[in-house]
Amino acid sequence: MCREPESRGRGRVAIIGGGAAGLAAAGYLACAGYEIDIYDKLPMLGGLMMFAIPTLRVPRDSVIEGVEDLKTRFSIKIFTRVKVFADGAERRDEGDEFVERVEPLSRIIESYDAVLIATGIWRSRKLGIEGEDSRGVFTALEFLYHVRAYEHGLIDRAPECGKKVVVVGAGLSAVDAAEQALELGAEEVYLVYRRTIREAPAGEYEIRRLIREGVKWIELAQPTKIVARNGRVVGVEFVRMRLGEPDETGRPRPIPVPGTEFVLEADTVIVAVGEMPTPPIEKEFMGISLDKRGRIVVDERMRTGNEKVFAAGDVVTGPSMIGRAFGSGLRAARFLDEYLRLR
Image 1 (cartoon, rainbow, N blue to C red):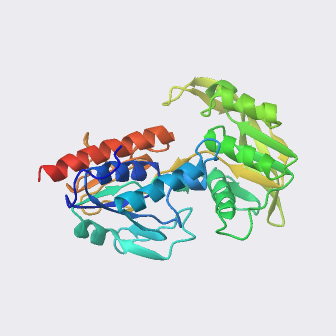
Image 2 (image 1 turned 180 degrees about the horizontal axis):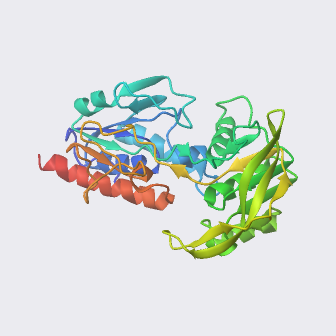
């Protein structure tokens, strides 16, 4: 957006979260002449772009190059392995293994002219069925995150991946997990979805691409139980579904068909039924509040109930595409810039 800042000393801004939204905002605000400090719980910036999304979709070298550019040309300060959270509260999310210290959110807000929260979605939804805590059962985020951490040399080994893998879900996380299982040497990979390929969140093209790669697609089936032996997964019980009238999402509602249960053998199960926002608060704090889905509430200018705190990305919208997160970060940065210029 620029080769050097237009001016210096406009003010100090803290960005909490160094994923797509946070990095986009950092670039915009650095160009405008602000001193930027980024706080992130991971050992390197990039968020899901570095720790979940396949490099074919988002080249990691490009992310690393962009972060280095922010550091060297725009003097952005980066504080990694730091989790920012509301004072006195505590919550463990996925991806917290590398956190070395927790910084009180109040201290961040009080120490800067403005703050942007862009902490993303680091908590997976669960199926809520028997056996889900068995060994060999992962969430897609957990599975992909540990594979990427291994590739970055941050841990000693990749997560175990058996020969028969069942992935539950049909979004991009499910697609990525299934493809990763193949790359790790799985002999059979099943992708199982409770609706049909036409309703798959990842899109019919992505599902058919996986089928061509050897993934077995099963639609209209929903898991009812993880089958375990001595605490380790050996299979998944499913029930067949039929589609009913549209639900609140506008998609046909899947309805179980009694008496159609069946079991797929598996030594690895990956649950990919979505992720949830992970704001740095559990309840209202310093004017910052959450809606019923746990997303940070902002107005049309991306501002929270605290006039100097803005929010952007998936922590505001819920799970979205990278491009939407970038756009959200840029919008929030523009409004934050206007706020500071008009003070």
